[in-house]
Image (cartoon, rainbow, N blue to C red; front, top):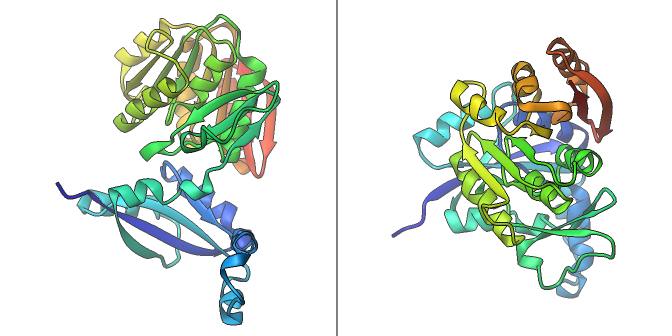
Length: 314
């Protein structure tokens, strides 16, 4: 059977525009992005110096100050509809490249490298498991982001992972809203949580999250992942409220966290912590106000590279 076809959408941008474009794309619902910057091009040239004698000056000039953002949609009517939604409010030309599913799923792997995060975590792509042992004192998490991305490389995910280190309660459960690749749930389990429940609106995320849990030796006795939308499914909210986790996570976007805020007290254990991220810094105060209106008290605000994470309690 022939592989499915995908479109790689490429937007050129100046380096100073990159963060704003990425923030808009994520706010429009893009589940994962790849960025390329001039610095990466220069690093590539340096690391592969043995393969070339000189570099065309015209190419160097062409790459000067240029950054690119790449995203992916299926090459069909649904993909075109999704692309229109993703590009809403972004008034700039783009180019597209057709990819087979295998090529698409592997084209971004070169951008995913082992990461040290916080004081105790070491995130390693599954394809580097044999060459990247954990530094002393760190827990190694093997991750294969798959079709849903969620690698830990984005600032908002790093903020959330750092917060998980601080707020996970050993021996107690964790609830992850918008679990994606399962990286936050797996990290919480590695840091001592007894059980993790994750939910995501994308059914593909459920399979990827289970696969990543298995990569780390975690079975379904330790984690459960569900497909669903807590904003529109009251029965799902009722089911999740039975968990009463002392740590509830939501690495999503401001436009989802704000309507989610009134549900948080139902899902959170007494004296528990709600940790949310994926918030561009200009909307941090707006999200904090929504949490406070819902009866939550802000404990802490963390910031990195123009992104905000908030920790709150009942």
